[in-house]
Length: 346
Image (cartoon, rainbow, N blue to C red; front, top):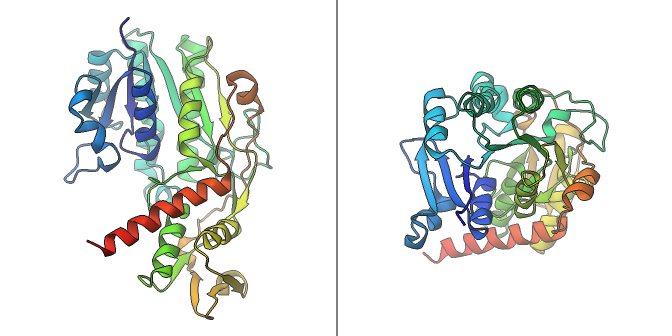
């Protein structure tokens, strides 16, 4: 029996790298879309790309969601059974600084893929990586039926992608599904995202490599899960008989400050906060200021609280998160601590 062919956009990212491994383990042939750049950004998947045994099962191609021709040609050549669209300009803060590019890549990029599937008349199953940011400040818990009112150019672009996916499903009969994923982290999360930034910073402070960690809103609440659990959910969404939209989440939320406390506990560090708002400071056991607030990290429009209701995914997909918040943080802290200690010995 021939193995299924899957195309992953954004394969060099956190989710793409985990999904590639997951699908290879299920005997898929995996095709990855990467952007051509002056520097290589394939660190997360280099072990797959350089594995001689995977030459016929794992293949990378240059392309860009902002380039309609490259997308059309790639999909036409591969004719994949499944497409997982994980590519995006995915940093919320950056989307305020580069809104046009964010809309082009994260929003219209999705349309380009759907149009390719439609015009080529393919039976390809399409997965769109949607996000909890589409809900904005809708009261939690948020589900598939909650009001969607994003608070950032990123959220707005993703809402367009979410809705154009639904429209192509209902209007053209394309197998197209949205996975509305709440925050999910891991050891390979990008270092500009707040969870990894906190862990990396506090590990370096612990090892006397860094003096201070600058952060924004300490009171934003997020539903944080573990990325490898979520890529299994992505795959399960495309294995259903009928396409549909699903929230993947943990159903629990924590503030950024909660996250800081959990990281400190794993590092055997004590921290105490004093002050309010922009003057709030985190002190270590020696009374040294190690965390300060920098207003430049505030968003122009804040999303205060996200917490997902994943009951539909649990019922239909038989999916639920396997890794607890505490275990996720422990894994991430251990990984970064080992990396920083290892860099000392080089």
